[in-house]
Length: 306
Image (cartoon, rainbow, N blue to C red; front, side):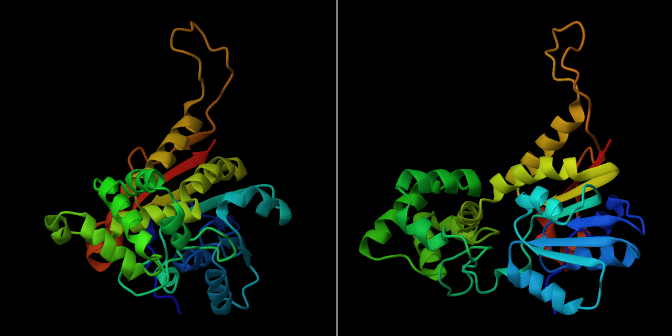
């Protein structure tokens, strides 16, 4: 049984505007919390659950063995076009992507500095790149870049320098080792803040390992293309880099004409593809944040295919 609490559950389900016969894609199945609610509504429809983590697929299959409405696919959501083509499905009525990580998925993957585990961080265990490889092989400048850009970490330069110095003595193997090195690279006052000093660096390395931002940029246009008219795409982001990508791609597809403002009339012939439903992102209530602190950073954006 999953230990994961889906964030913005009611808001997300309502925003998808589901009908009983809808074909719905949960592009990031995870713990399956959103999908379980979707299944309550689409009595005569289909749910396509996608996840790069085979354990997420296996767990959901065990809990829903007899449900013929469910199609489960072990793949990355960036491959949505090929997934739907293989299933001979041309268009769908709704797509959901929760970019957070299920609590279940964090266990045993070397992602948490709270446990002593080998540095790994791969969602897909078949891929070659691992956190250990990045930490021990990336040049200092490259480490600094990804910690600064993906982690939005102000002490990126110091942290990258300390990592490179430490690995000269011996290979950095575990999450605890890396967290301790990061702790030596930041001012002592930083260690008493709201988040652990290692949080942003671990986030940055995880994003790099799993190509999270590149996959998101690839997925969103494909998802919009896959929707039927009036179909909706709902995406939940957990940090500013993700949210910025979603906002920009939604706006670009809602804009239509791309002619320079100096042109007296449109010559590009471009038309809006989507209507942005959420002018501002939907965020969690105080009650949900109190019950599930990880919901604090969640932002839900929704668009509708024209």
